[in-house]
Amino acid sequence: MKHEYNPQEALDLLIRKLNDADQQLAAHVRAAVNAGTDVQEIQQPRGRDANKPRSYRRTVPYSPEQALQVAVDALRAHFVEQPMFINSLLDDMVPASLGPGTTSSPSLAGNDKPIHIKTEGTEKAIEIELYTETQLVGELGVTSREPELQPMARVSAEEIRLQQSNLNRLRDLVDFREGL
Image 1 (spheres, rainbow, N blue to C red):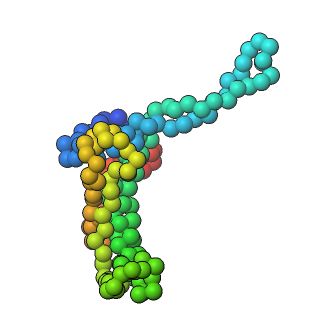
Image 2: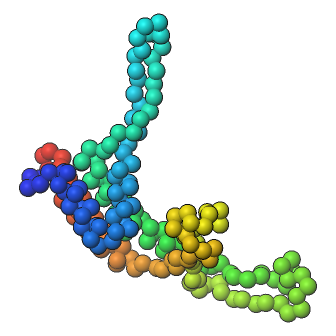
Image 3: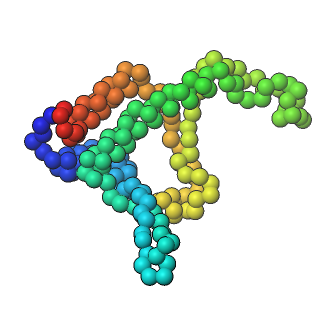
C-alpha cells in the first residue's frame, strides 16, 4: 500500500486526534509509546578486562512504525479488550450470591434474624476503587480519603465488534510494510 504520509506524520496525527477527543486516553497512549523497548547490549571492554564482556539493558525509543503499532495496541486494549474483560466479569458474577449463605454461617452468629439476599442468576452492579487504600492523599491527584468508584457497565457485543472493525481499519492505514 502506498501512503501519502510517513509513519511519523501518521503517529503525530493519531496522537493529536486522540488528544482532541480524550486527553486522558491520549496521555495513556503517549505513555505507552514513550516507554520504548528494552534492548540488551554487550560491551567489549578494553585493557586488562578484555576477555570479560559486559552486558547491560537500556531503553531505546520505538521506531515510528513500531510506535504506531504500540499506539494501535493500546487503543485495542482500551476499546476492545477492557470491555470484553468487564463483560466476562459481569457474566461470571451472575451465578454468585450476595450476603450470608445460610443461617449456620459464622457471619450470622448473634443475629436474631437471618438475612436472605437472593441474587443468584441476576446481573450485579459492580464498581471498582480507582485508588488503593495504600496511596497517600495528594498522590495521583487524590484529595480526600473517600474512594473514587468506577462502575463497570456492560458493553454490547455489537459495540465491541464495531470498535474491532474501526481498529482493523486504523491498523491498515498505519501499516507501512512493503508489498501491501
